[in-house]
Image (cartoon, rainbow over all chains, first blue to last red; front, top):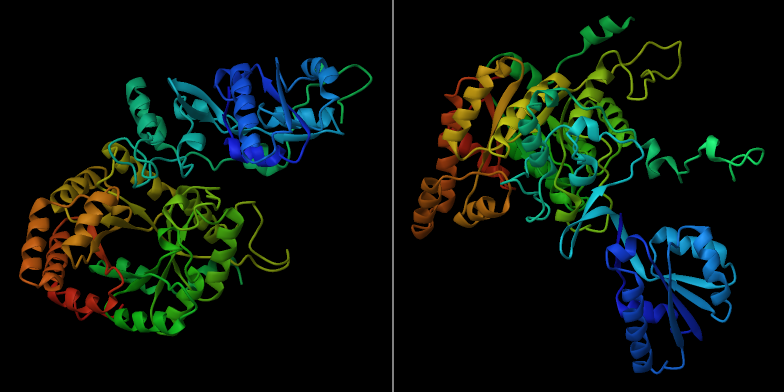
Length: 230
Length: 323
């Protein structure tokens, strides 16, 4: 899932303080699962913002909340449309895709982000989410026994650990696992360590954000005659 | 002139000649200054010229901005020293790495050395981007292809027009290896990969734990790797027990035996830390020299280049032969 964490209340307060009516919009998908921008968090943020605004003498700013199922899909945004009109600003608690989808759909309403979108990852332990995928568009997990060095090695090394690997941990953050120790351990367990004697090719970043903004086009899914929507 | 004759005209670097001679070689390093202080580079170069075969020029060491590596290397060259141009994969993508190598070659710099570099977050520009487009293994491969057949990573030939002959860019190229980092088994494998990728020489992480270095070298010999690459043991001249403690606790992948810590503790009480530091470094050099397959040492003076001479003197490595 996409993992996000909520921006601090003062940051959001300062973004919205000059508006008169602000709608906080939660999202029922990834950010609900990672406890950053679901219905519950949106409600809590609404209360916090109302208090924070009052404390700086902006108690007149109206802050309301609602949550839609998925901010990254137009079908769900349509259900939100009738509610948006009375507001001069939206603060989206969806991921960066959600924020932009709302901005696209409501050209006359200012849209602010309420969360910082972090990464694609998993819940590792209660309250701890870990990045697993950098979405580079060119998956090589098959080469690396299912552990991604592009995402999980701080130096994106593709050919083994740097000198900073100690006791299985990364030199950057002591409590973070060294991806190459994990790869090594798993390769040993699978009996395939020898495959790492081969030099892994440099990565092709053209499919990552380095290649410019990305799009996936499935001709078979495009409506006949209309072609891919540019 | 065809490419082969062009290549045969090439005079190898002093470091390459020294290593090929089979004699025990000595390299050292110089950290470029934080400002445009050319005099600083010249002064430090003067401490090392004639005492070592080549001088590594670090590349934004510690992930902090310093005078760029090739300009520092040029100052060393002008002073009669022989630079080894260090490259990290932290600050440059493959275009920048190759462009700098071409430029350095044009300036007469003949040795290079590639490392992944201290991570960007360990320096003072913590909000900057860690480039890491390629890893050191790939840089070694690029360097080899720039020499033969004389092409860039893109496949483009190193010439300005199809009518010109290819102008290969040739470097005597080194890489790092840490005999003391985890996972141990992977270290030897990685060393073999670096050799396959094209490394001509290896400078190791600093050796204090000579026993573990011996074990590492035994493994290297088992695999016959010492015959394929020149391994230089890294020796750090630590002048205070504080420096040792810092390395032991804060620098990953350094193993320092208790005995050395105690010697430096005693020396501190007797106010002869510097002398003891020099003595320890000289002993480690001599011990490295006795290990089969170790072709030389890389002396890191921690910014005290003037101590290279007494250390090497004590280790019995001066005067240096003329390579």
